[in-house]
Image (cartoon, rainbow, N blue to C red; front, side, top):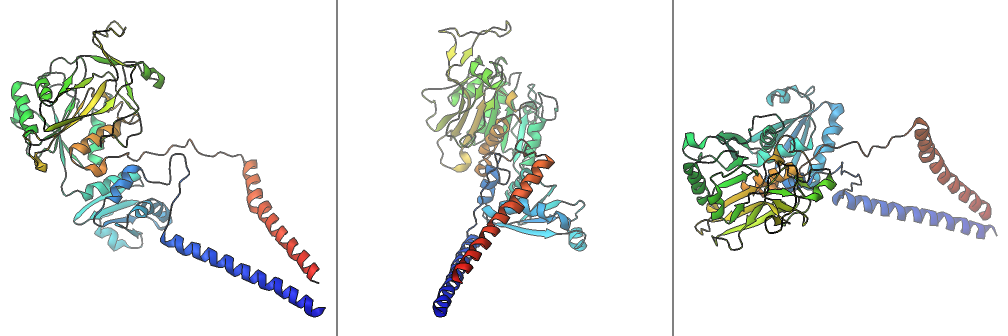
Length: 458
């Protein structure tokens, strides 16, 4: 009898040991695989622990190493690690170094660090720095150091265009700041004064002119495009003849003399004369854009059914809803209605992208690129950060500059809409439930099973 009891208790012991070894082995295997094949999951509504699509696209496109050195106090190291590890997760080209300026004074002096929470981003001989924790700033810094040269964007002036130095609602100061953050150098040009398009111009922007271009200026623009120039035109309604209509016609685009009315806009809290675009085409500029864009007072664009130049392609970017129309009567009366045979029925095109070679050349440097919008106010200071407007404008500039890696959805600041608020009583209840009651119940059940098995064995 004693021998039988011994064998039975020994069997329980051996089973328990064997089970423990198996569980331990499974956990070790999971840990081993996980350490080499990490996978992050972000269940927050705003993806607070994930990079924005643009940031992911930028780091995945890196061909050479980019070093990020963070100069933080030791106690702030988790802040630095939390941000840069998101980048490192998507690319092994990201190299990270942490420095406490109080402990490594010599290195801090070498880098001329003047403030805590400064990140130095290096790529070859190019270097830039970011102060304070920000995904948007860090991504822009990686973009900047990754460029072989600083692209130059020129804005025309002399025709009452949007002013890049104007901080008021109608100005374009925010456009200028956003472009600078993405690594562009911003200048303006008076074509009548220079008599030519500057040789260092990578992208030329004509933002909401109200006065016409002279024939000589239109000729300069035409020659610029013929030689592979990159131009953006933002043409407002009710601005009259601008002198560049013939140039647009030569590439198959007509800026209509109308104002787009879209009753659907009222659902979004907008005026019917501020059309909303919530779905886009598959063009590279907009294919990743998921946010609606708003156009305060816009004109429609028409693409010729038969393009005048077979070497040039025209693609629509944004269209209004079928319920929209192009109002040709004056809106001063405050009333707008669709007139059959006079007004054009929607969907209407609000933006187009043009590319190709004027003379049919196959050389990359001869490829012209042109983006035309039927509105300039969607990118002004009052509208730039509204929904998808800013992304649409910046994506267009990136496409014009042939910088496809930066065409995406940019990082946005997190809001606190998803914060969980609890009273002190609720906090105590959660603590008791998760720290004491549940673990205690598991431990108690284990002890109970062990005690019954011990009595049965005896």
